[in-house]
Image (cartoon, chains in turn yellow, green):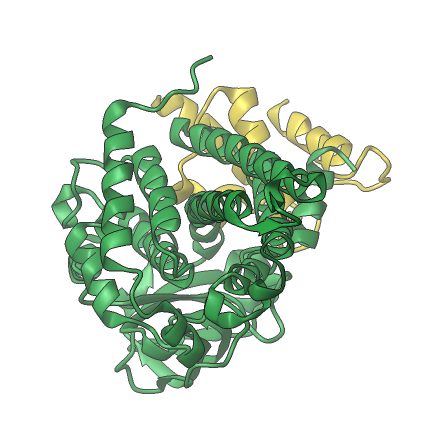
Length: 82
Length: 383
């Protein structure tokens, strides 16, 4: 569910809803060019607001944000911790 | 809504203005012409406590924790009081793009090594990001840092780096894993005496001439593992973290310079007589002053709003881009208006008016050009 929301945000907001792209939870977002650097900052902002969490800069790493699946895992861990 | 500042912040800002006017305004024209950095003024700033505004008391700062709004207002005061625009520019560059990332991402050993020395003015740090082929497209950088047994091996070049010719150390962004694209960028803290690391001589430039600029070159430069700032691949977040703090404070000093410039123009146009009247009584002159005031105050509102959002920990991407665009372009436009109002004498370097225009042009180019700011704004508006 969370992964679909993030994918939907990427398609609707970052690609203007005009793309016939298909994004899978395991796709490398930045490395593949699906999301450019500013788009990633907007995506992080969306994740923060949508989940009521604050993501410190130290956590903005490849382990946590390379793919939608990694993001979902990070969000769930963050929520559980706190 | 309350637009007022705490009294203590304003008192401190006034102290900074008085310090700058008293201590920093000698020999500016000569240094500008010679493109010469003043180590003496750098040390005076440290003694007064400018560089330490970016660090907490543990590392030489004045307060238990950095008070960003207080520091930003102080840097506005410095820009107002110090007529050498290059000095506040250089101070801000070190404080917010070198000291701040070390403070937030460094380990204790790195903080102890660099932060107190920078706060005392005994060490100058450069921020190495731009490359000949990676300007606006910054993540296409080609400086590589290959992981080897003893640490990392750096090869490549940084370009247009403030303080490169005189720095003691540099915070340098390099690609540690080109396969990972933007996620492969890491940050390193490298001392100037490291083998394979050299800095160019200073390059001649149009404005901000008292702060030297140059290249950083890396040829088989081996740095130990503990030179890494944060984790491998953290360059992206380190860069994003410091960018908006840097923008606010560099632009705060520019705002101070704009206020000083406006006051000088008003003073001159009240005194200067032509056709038996003060030239300020002619609408062609006074209208330009009204435009300068409007630019100053709209820039101020955007600056304070952006800083307020950052202080709260909120996202300020849109506001920071609008601020950078508005304030830097305003300084250029107002500097040209100032020259028109001062008339022919402003064209002579000895009168110290044209320098603001030369300094202002840098602002529409560094830390993201005006074109890039417009692109960011448009994208954030969903275009």
